[in-house]
Length: 250
Image (cartoon, rainbow, N blue to C red):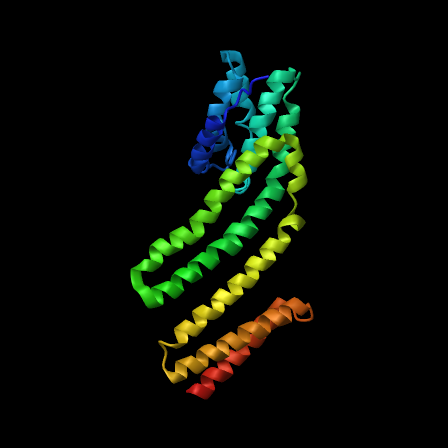
């Protein structure tokens, strides 16, 4: 049977997904933007007014996740809507439950990979370039950050459409944890380069202070990772060290 949803429709969904947060609100979060992105699919699978109304109502319900990983859901929902029409599903409950169950896991994955890893790394690379090449840091930051997520959006959308319900097997925080760990190590390496570059522009006293701060930060991270030191105790300890260093420097 000929496909109802075409590849060109999916590319239109991809383009519309950039506006998924354009009408974000506290009542239904990304629901309106999600529905807006699916309109090219609605034109294929909802051939009369009654079906279009049902389609819009179904996808205007509460939905909230990371705006990049939402493309997996958009692709899978496009596939499910096509399957529902072909197989004459009696209810839309499977699609609604599918969307609800994916909000949390995809939100955690997206926040970890993009907000907590990719964006800080791109920003630090921009800082390094700014120290040595000035305004070239701006376009470089935009390229370093945007190219990966543009690719991810397209890949997630088409993968979701290929697999439908089966895309759930690929969605796991543990599955993405190794990638998040590698990005964290890359971020630490880039941060080291930033600090080394910044020492070049500081005088000897400030350079020593920067080195002490870096050492305290490293010791703090190791202490927290060990689990033997609580965060409040560590903060008090750092405060005492800071006061002593300040008194000695004065």
